[in-house]
Image (tube, rainbow, N blue to C red; front, side, top):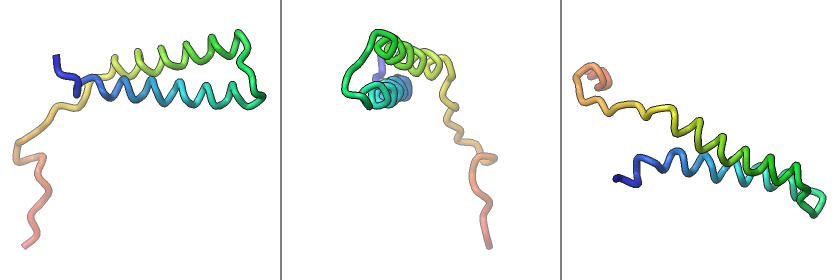
Length: 69
């Protein structure tokens, strides 16, 4: 298991949770619905990002930038 494959989803979950927590803490307290929103933001960021595959690495000549003479 390579951890590097999963960093995209982990970072998305952390960013979504932090953004939701920052919004919820504007009034100095976290209510029940705000806590649910934070959990759903983390799970949504993790799940949706995990579902989208990374672009495969290409090494073909078509992927190389054009040569300027």
